[in-house]
Image (tube, rainbow, N blue to C red; front, side, top):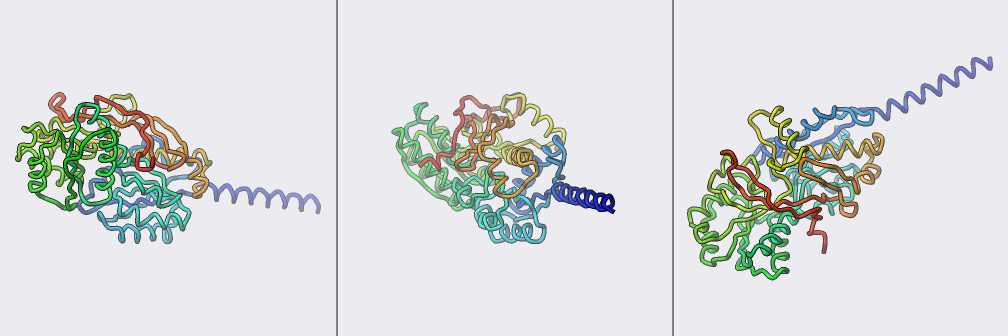
Length: 391
């Protein structure tokens, strides 16, 4: 009888252990809020390409848990839609991690939900500085506009450009770029000759650029949404002859991202930008990344969005390895703080104080190399923290 009772107790104990093990090993679901349709659909596509490439290389299981993805379309700059999709992911789909967020307004709208649910939220692109301050459960793997704007101002002044005009789109990222460039440039002794904020959907920049032409600064610093807006700006810049007046065109690197280069064409040649990633970055990790990307997505080119998706998954995998599969908000965020790895873009780290990315910023010139437009890096600012949070 006693032997039977002991056997029963052992069986119960084993059953409990198996139940715990099964619970710990259950699938882990990542809910992606991205622009799948609408004017920013390319953002969502590139981020997903980066995610899928990382998972293809590293498998779909980490710390004994199989990773599942659920994608929700925010349709573009649509905070209400993004919030509704995130609520559905949290309540209906019971996702363990939120990720994606290619656009700032959408990330802002979802941040309070991450706080309330205590669910990690990994920002893979949205670049307004203050995003990580909106929830203690947000970490960002992409960039901030102040990082590249700071680097651009530093390089410009140190290379004899002492006057500039600022033109930015009138929304969060544009404001960040404007304020940081102005702060850094004037702090070094530079003079701002004028400033203008343009509507986000501007199709013709001629009236704004005429003011720049009349002012005759040494350089125009600009930030507008990549894509058709940037193409219009470059076209108008050339048509008005600002380049012939010796006015240098410069800005954050997403202005000349790889997917925009065919549309920009030779009109953008010579443009100087500051950024954390170029497909032409010379490192073994990036050469392998670019080759693998070309094989997986023929006819496409990786850009900063695909790096955001790739490193976003890299962060998720590394954090889960560290927590042994625990995706709980507090354990996950503790694992993320101070994390370092070698990205195709170069060395990166998650700032333990701000949960934002620390990375090298490269100064690049748009050139034709072997007949192909490329952002050629020629100077580097090492380990740049987000200046927008440095006071």
